[in-house]
Image (tube, rainbow, N blue to C red; front, side, top):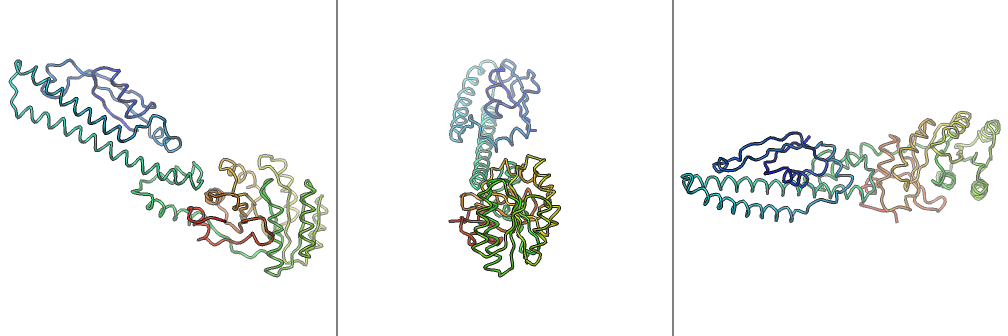
Length: 384
């Protein structure tokens, strides 16, 4: 909590200064009448000492929303210069009025003026320092939002003070290394792809089948239970025919058991599932029953790199009960900011097995290198 005291003539002046320096969320916790400091205080009416406080969490909210009443540093400096001028004028007037009432030596007057000027200079330096710090924080905040890092993670990243943006980036690189993992394991056995609708799951499984069959020379089989979309079945069947890959369409749990048995000679069996809403627990439970029947060797969650930050948590939480082990991040060619890679990796705690970067089958899918993802997240590179 930040606590400040103000010496003012009346409460109107107190409220104005508190609102100006601490913002509208500050609260007054005490007030009392006191004599004005200095030798002239004995001849002046009593002042009011007002104590105000501001909670730290109110201050941190400035990272999320820039307040409309922020005051530019130049205006602050001009205001303080005016205050210095008014203060000097007031001292001169007080000096003239008190000459007949009290004997004041020039040394005392000079010391008093020096103290007042010193106090104002300290205030000016403090304003300049605080404003410089705020500008640096604003620069970092703008950078994180530009690369699309989620607000919740932004607060965590900015919890430490940095001298400049480059120092911050160096620390951010360490966090990326801690939280973004790559899976380089070779796929084998039964591999299930799960994920919400609209992430390009069917196209992704076709790309993966093509990569494994045509490039890695593996014997690949395809199964789909996505019978809700006729177009998806036809699309996958067409790809399977072109690549000369066995293809099975499954509707019931019994058919799933038969399809897996028929493809047991394949090195890898890729299984496409129906896109389910992560918020629909009944649909997720139905999908879990199919997966349990399959007894897969790998379950991979397919999630789009264009997913809104507020939806990432919902998707990851909804599919967590399926015990997915790896991630495939799709549609990176459809965005220019790649902070979602960090958001998804950090929140899921799972390694990235593949990324997709276009519509071409099977070319636009690959196992990424860490350096490649780091540059994308930092905004130092892009997918053309």
